[in-house]
Image (cartoon, rainbow, N blue to C red; front, top):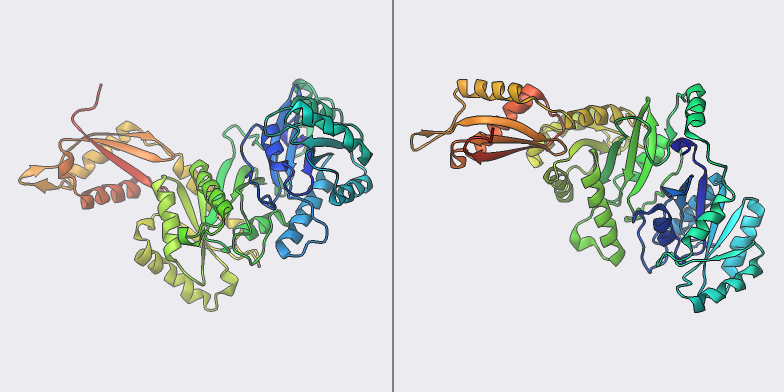
Length: 467
């Protein structure tokens, strides 16, 4: 298979609600794009990797093409579509096989003619043999053979793969590919990579989360120096969780741009429930969460809920105070940040934070230094002998609590997992370990071993550990 970063790109396009996202999910084999009966659900470019026989290619899902858009979001959606079409090597033009050819279909046809790239016609929603007869009507577009498919039922997908493969380069044998890669010079500037990282340890998955309009998509666009995701002042502009492969200083990342998390009472549209679910799933699969908080507004109740959810899932995090360019007295505000954390979210004293500005690009790439260090802390493992020496030292310091004359004793401890970082302590009686005692153990554990930015879970078990 070809190196991921060299895979050809295939773009899916068509008017709204013809089944583009369903086809994207079918070709990539993942339910990564939101599918809904409402028009305009897909807004940003969503990338994935599709494989068929010896062929592999990157696939990009786009929003529905609408001529003469009337609102700012739809206008920016059209810019995203054109960017994908210009970048692509092959275009898959999806049409609704249960409807006649529309004026918009013809306008898209004319645009693709001018583009001058290979086009594969995918006539979708032909769910049975009777409907499949409709495919002949689409010869009228003059774009070659129409391919009857049902992306929902998986019909005709193999033939569609074959049609796409006709326009792709012949796969290079792996030994030849590796030889070519050895001669290539690595770029010195940030670049967008393909679906999977090439490094042995894999990329660092970074979920960028926060309330609506806090600057998540703007952060992505600023570091990529392009409008990779749609940004407007309208809350809820980002609907899906978008994976973006990125390289910085020879390290690979998957940046996950997410929809803003608002209070349940603020969720008005049915599709927003899908957006929230995708954001929460992005948090669960992330290595590090970059939590964005408005530096002017400060920590709100919703911000507290968001960081609480990250902590409950045992995910490492970095706090980024955004919109720093709007802060008037920066020195005084920076001094107050630690106090605000102590007052409103004291359980986050172990989390590092920085101030950023998407507008001036101030400290945007410094965030990755914080992310790298936090990701390393999240993967840290303490050997069992070292941990038990630490626990023995705690006992020697007279750190044990008492209840009715009985001392709380830790017999043995071991780290059982990372991401989330979890320790098990075997004790004589769990009832003897008060909350304040557990907090004391955690604080001393952090002083000794670090775990900066990483939630630590300490479980108690009674009795002796199994040998």
